[in-house]
Amino acid sequence: MSNRNLKEEFVSQIEKHQGIIYKVSRMYCDKEECRQDLFQDILVQLWQSFPTFNKQSKFSTWMYRVALNTAIAQFRKDKKNNEDTMSEIPVNIIEEESYKEKEDRKELVQRAINKLSKAEKAIIILYMDDYTYEEISEIAGITMSNVGVKISRIKTKLQKILKELEYGL
Amino acid sequence: MDFKEIKNVWKDSVKDEKLLNKEEIEAKLKIKGKSNTALNKVKRNYKIELILGGSFSVFFIVWMFMNLAMDYKFIIITLTVLFFGILISFTWRNFRKVRKTVISSEQLKPALVKTIKDIEIYVNFNKSNFSKFLLLPFAICFGMVIGLFMNSEDKGILEIFDSVEIIKLVVTLVIVSAVFIPISQYFNKKMYKQHLDELKQCLKEFENIEDENK
Image (cartoon, rainbow over all chains, first blue to last red):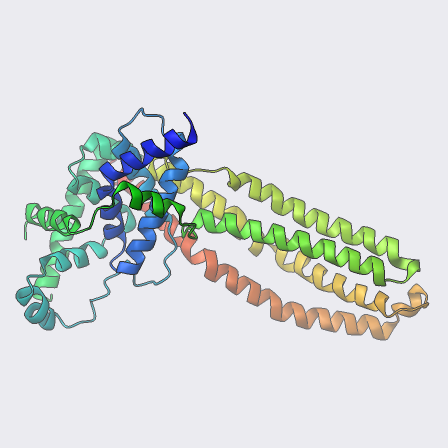
């Protein structure tokens, strides 16, 4: 396949599945600047790795692998990028101004996600995107029987964090 | 908030993103931004070291050729070529190991193992005793010896290295090493060690997932 055709095929696939890059960037960065950098980095890594895509797995599965690997291996310019940057704001202020008034549940969920580790984020993003245990196991490189147990633990952890954030525990 | 709700909120927040068309994707691919991944940083650093080391060694050898006294010129230049040759070939060997690595399409856990290994080669060399106590002091000592030869005019070797010069050389070497070794180690740690620890922690988590269920 010529380079031009390869690029056309790549761009067309990315156009279809670009949501994955947005999801991964959002999962691993809570700041816009960091998200844009990560988006760009993932896109370039995908293009560089595209010749190695052997079509044995779905494009979206392969894309998730590249995107998550890039996100996990990225250097953090700002230590707080992936941590809870709002945790220092008193909870009552968040509840009054942000959470209740501005209906900012998205932000709350984002803050809870930020508290997960890199590995937990990788697993839960796939689960939230409706991937099966088998697919998650294939992407992460862990056995299928352990995926279910881990997901259940992450779900519980996430709910606990959310509860703490909502009620300021 | 139950998990179904969390999932819906999460999905909603991603829906807000403006999707790119083909032209915009192609435009983004043309941007040659610096990758922020650990492996690409290591690759970039190897390239910088090779380019700088190569250019500097050529410049230095030409400069010595033009400035050194005839008596010692060839032996000193031979030593310099050997020194830079060993250093550059060592860097090139390590660079070759990571140059063609495209690990990002592998499964997360094995990809992490490889990334950690590649970064460790780089970090371990920089923090090794060979680098700290041999390479760096040798480079400093080498520079100073060249300086002595530069000012030697027609002196004999014993005159060049008289006891005062040797004491000066040793004292300077100790002081400069005492300053530069901790600085270089600090930057090495700051640049990679912390990140390496994070990656190791992530790998440990993946391994723990397997262990917890045994």
